Amino acid sequence: MTDKRFHLSWFMNFTPDEWREPFGNGGTPWDGEFYIEMAKMLDRACFDYIMIEDKLMVPEIYGGSRDLALKAAMIAPKHDPAPLAVAMGMATQHLGVIATMSTMAYPPFMLARLSSTIDSLTKGRFGWNVVTSAEDLAAQNFNMDALPPREQRYAMADEYMEVVHKLFESWEPDAVVLDRENGVYADPSKVHTIDHKGEFFNVRGPLNTVPSPQGKPVFVQAGASPRGRDFAATHADSIVSVANGIEGMKAFRDDIRARAEKLGRNPDDIKVLFCITPTLGETEKEAREKYDRVMMSDNFVTDILVSMSGITEIDFAQFDLDKPLPEKLVTNGESGTLDKFQQWGSGKTLRELAADSGGGMVSSLELIGTPDQVAERMGDAMAEVGGDGFLVTTPTLRVSRRYVVEVTDGLVPALQKRGLMRTEYKHKLLRDNLREF
Ligand SMILES: Cc1cc2nc3c(=O)[nH]c(=O)nc-3n(C[C@H](O)[C@H](O)[C@H](O)COP(=O)(O)O)c2cc1C
Image (cartoon, rainbow, N blue to C red; front, side, top):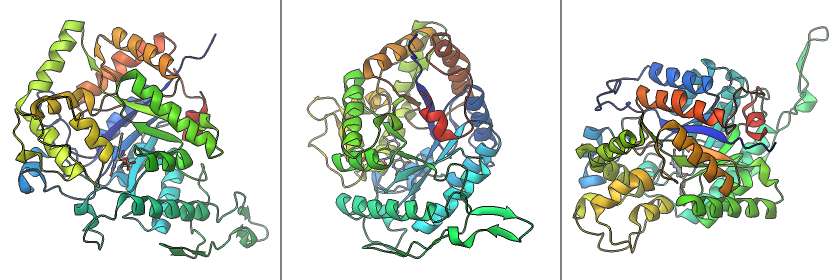
């Protein structure tokens, strides 16, 4: 019998939960308990990992001020993902925990040390979502007036990766000998400086942490541009993406695998996960009504436009909601995200684009129905795409406890029943679980 299993992970952020909604938690999860509980639910449901999004600014693009972003709690307030990853990892047994950290923000030595430490604390289940940051407002928090152009951001990120790899390798795997008799903790001949002198970084090394269980964190990446895809194909253990339908998913995965092969990597070592937002109900009709209700809610359009403005640094408040966008928009920020959102040439109004983005911006596939219907569709889609898996998320990245339960206790059993998802973890390390199938 062929193995039809695929990987399932979740993408969220350390912001308020669905605080305005009837089944929300009220908006004050800042002690992390709400998300620790969520991580335990995903652990029980055999998810591969939970990934925490991050941005390093308070947006003030939509409407030209911070007001609407703060009122809606979109993008800000947001707490640091790294401590939450530790808390979630230490409260679970098998689930991988991924924190987003920007190559623009952390000096490579700090990033390597932090990742190594968290990997040890979580017994080999830590991953790093490698981002380069895409906003002038973020750059201005790090001694710059504006974001460097994309090409330079990636050139810097290439060297950054070279440095962190050297740092992770600065301790040989068997450098810690723990020889009590001879009084040797670490063998000095197995710990090396890296003496890196490059265009952007000068780092002496060695790292001052012991090798962590995985040696290096799992690397996650979301490059979408040709440059970004090459970067991801070079470094990533898992790539997360939003695609247009089954054909779009297949084309993206085939492209990544071809790039990886060209770069001398085994494409099977890279798990490409596509964002989805299943809407689940007792009946298909109920699920459809739920979907329509969310998309038409007063708050939804504003939330989406505040978020889009923050990410692309384009003020969507300047455009008429009931007309198509007047011109094709471009950004030095997340251009792939912008292109998917604006659907240039479709003739859709901005309101329609915002509503669509519930399905289009975060979802690679329409999934509305009972758990059995959605599981069936996911299985069919994955069979056509060729494999790897999905990343569950929501358009605002927020969650309610009820939504998590619908997925973990409704959808997951339906997937497991069909042999589409693991029913138990086979390995201790996140990288091994990712490579199991
Ligand atoms: C699923 C997903 C998650 C992402 N998470 C983040 C994030 O947490 N922080 C961030 O700054 N960028 C994030 N990005 C943006 C990517 O890192 C990347 O900049 C974007 O996909 C555009 O690709 P490009 O840089 O090749 O144009 C994410 C993108 C996707 C598709």
